[in-house]
Amino acid sequence: MSELTVDIQNVFEGSSVPADTQFQTWAQNAWLGEHPSEVTVRIVDTLESQSLNNEFRGKDKPTNVLSFPFEAPAGITVPLAGDLVICAPVVEREAAEQDKTPTAHWAHMVVHGMLHLQGYDHVDDEDAEAMEALEIRLLGQLGFGNPYEAEETEQDS
Image 1 (cartoon, rainbow, N blue to C red):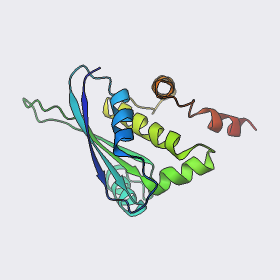
Image 2: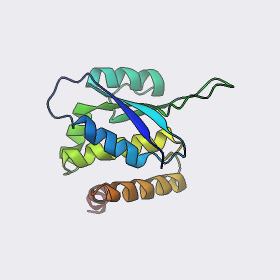
Image 3: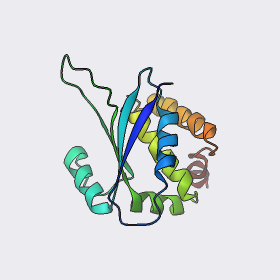
């Protein structure tokens, strides 16, 4: 596993955002690349998240995490993984709704977003299963439980 530089841009005015060192640990753990790289993690409010989600995904609502992989122009090699934009109010609300600790859900959003930056996706069932299994393993290495267990038990009842 190569070194990952994490640049934090916290523009959310709230006290519930984890420490920069936690973002560094979570992102580094989810960086599976063979070369050093850099990622920007931007913590935003619902307005910025909704605006970006609408502009880039056509969904006019805030979302938990958006991933923007860096695409270098032809012939240019720059060690940038891309950007993650995480909406603090959505993460906090989801953690409460899913009966998870906020810290565990923040970690999940960083790991999930980092995997997207590396080409993982969950559009079809097979890809979703592979991505979820990797998320569960990476979060386990960080000391967090399976982030999908609570959701599955809710669906079963």
